[in-house]
Length: 274
Image (cartoon, one colour):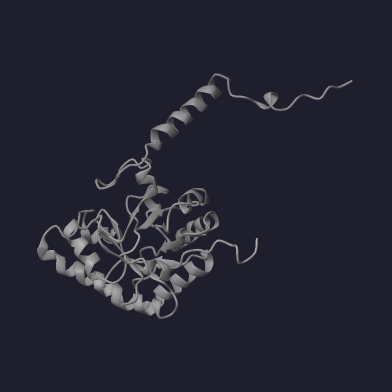
């Protein structure tokens, strides 16, 4: 296949240009095989630090390491062809300084080949976002409910339910945009506030448990497929694969125990001797 006919991946500038255009479709993936499926239908694949919950059974995303993100980000890149792949920067990999953030983000881009990173925080991370973007690293922001801050938030509660608390979240959105972020995830924010932010900022908003008026939407793949034992109230399940998978495993176990499972004798003919 020639270079000219090769499928070109979407880029951060292309996603930025989708503001108030066709809605941006985004899902998480952590494996090459699910990435191949997601890639056919999505503009952006997020290798989220939610892999800590989904793959490793952690209660929060806090224990996730940079090496874990790079390992799964590399797998997703191998499995996908056309979507922009964005890799989360895990807790502890960027907060200490702009320089720490750059070294962590550079490792992610160089070792995975992905097209952008995502980090949590608005006003408090604006200087870091600007530092990264000025040095060639596309950044997706994340405001509203920020799961890495769970130990200070205390719970995964929705943000902006009271209008008195809107100003701080609006400032966060503007800070991400002003610092050069190409888009911003708005998580678990009251619908009127998410709608207002989408109208006010010049970069695409990606909603998760926010407003349908956002410029795009993202969900954790396992949540929307019905594979997660606990899902947020806002998640619409588009499948119930958990019971189907368990039924298949049960059938396999039953066949093995009853010796009904096909063995090599059903595949290979014994060679005649003599």
